[in-house]
Length: 435
Image (spheres, rainbow, N blue to C red):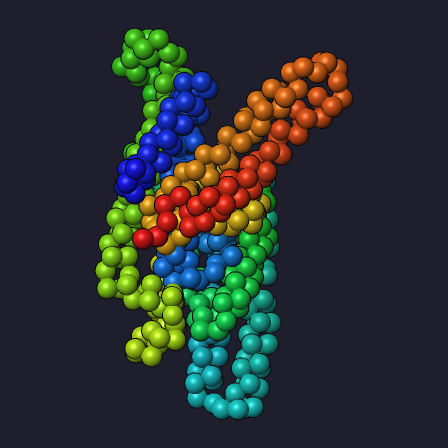
């Protein structure tokens, strides 16, 4: 079996798994898993750009995903004019004061030297903190007090949610630039610590700043992209009702399938565009330069390459892709839940996708996203079936049988570990390794 045939076979097996879920469970479930896998593949591509191209260890993926979700929310939801009238001017003035403080610190850093510079920057920071809070706190209280049960925030721009995908990439890239300017060029563990810290800070802000994101009260009912219909509109259509009857299925099932197919088409387009650009970049002189820097930074720097600058560039690009994926995921869910962002799900799992698929290979990253994403969702039903099989000979009232069946919900983490161990044992470089 040739290498190319092996790769095709791996993707074909994934296709058969989706078909099996559709036949033995439901096509709606199969399409739901497919949409999740498409978004996971985009996230995996973003991390692969950072780790596979340049060897940058980002353990704060969760924060960049959350920024993408926040962007999709703030772009798509309508503004809350009452809250804007109550405290919008205070927020704007506080932002203006913050910009002045940053400019003053930047000016002092460039113009002053030694102890005088430290003293002036410290004084500006302390003074600006109290001045900004003097105007910010009353504005925040006024906004959060306005219809706190229903809104309690400023709302958004009421624009198509697809614009939020672009903004999600921009916000994630901006956060990556800030982290990279501080930590890139130092040891790799500094970058890992910095990304972990910034991701926790981002999640803490999203959970506690109700005036911006409603915090733990969540934002529900996000609008869908223009290309994705609503189930109720399909169910009212005579054409779709006749089609459902001719196929021998209910209109409710058909409407759910059509909506998920619309999402799948949209997500597949984004994935293919990012995959195409990633492949072109990897095969270009820029991609060869990045791999040379990854393999031997000292030799690359001796040849005149700006190692820190290229690391910053690729770190920003990868984070932007992750931010877009975060906006896609929030769009699919239709709600923004800051408390749902956990390191296990949005950092560890994405790293498993890259490792299982094959770091440094874009097709491997995509395959890893599909494999791990599929079994992440199907782990619980597979675990329940497995426990049911091994306990089939036990009595119905057996305590051991009851305990094992209840433990099926915990099979997910064990299955991820088993998949990772098997791949590392038999294909250490991933299912589709780097050439």
